[in-house]
Length: 101
Image (tube, rainbow, N blue to C red; front, side):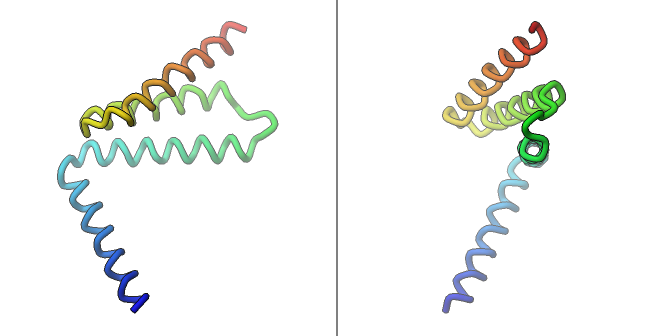
């Protein structure tokens, strides 16, 4: 019974992903790229502490946040949009302060 539930859930997940892609392929690709940027930045940060390459990571992270913000607009998701606009703002201020210092 448990194995059947797993297969059913995997099939539902695949249909959901296919529907998401079919509804807006461009947005799907943008979100995948933004997700890759997010994971890549997080891994780079974790691997390079205590001195991560912030000058490289900050602009890439901000780009990913902007991509997510755009995608959230196309989904009409106010919460997601608010989150990524705020993250973009905070990190742009951080990058600017780092460059000025």
